[in-house]
Image (cartoon, rainbow, N blue to C red):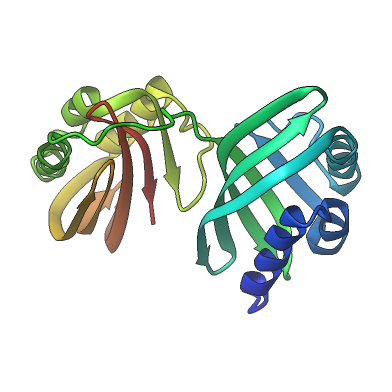
Length: 237
């Protein structure tokens, strides 16, 4: 792990905000960089191919605002959420997106962009706390698939430490949940902390389970964003 990852990520973000995208790309991206747009890495393998894509964006886009919303830094894995307001060609585009980075020797070797497709101003619901408590109880009672089917949105995106590969949409995420259920035996799932703030919730849980032949014990945070009483985004750290 490089101790420079935090400052280098801050420099990357500042470069976006000050329209120096190519300069920071040249400086902070690895020669073997692979980049993904909503899970697709077509024509985005290697620095030369990715620079062409960056040049195309720079030559056709005018950034009006790039507002940093959140950052996550965990060793060689980092992420940030940004509100983007830009004109591309003749089209004005406003969107929030997560960017997830994996670092190698102080350089980004993998980056994934995932657009957040949620209602712009969802109304908080009084059911969210009870629904979250039902999800937690479902985990503790080995009813993971039942609570997934009931409380997760059709457009749910799930992240494991910043990685959403094969975790976009309810069908793909159910397959992942089925794989866990079919291979894991949960011995203990102890709730440590619970946070509820409007449409944003989180819980910390101590997990003791056997997966395959391996006994695993760990503390984990799960962070949810809700839409119409259903989880539309969930992140595990």
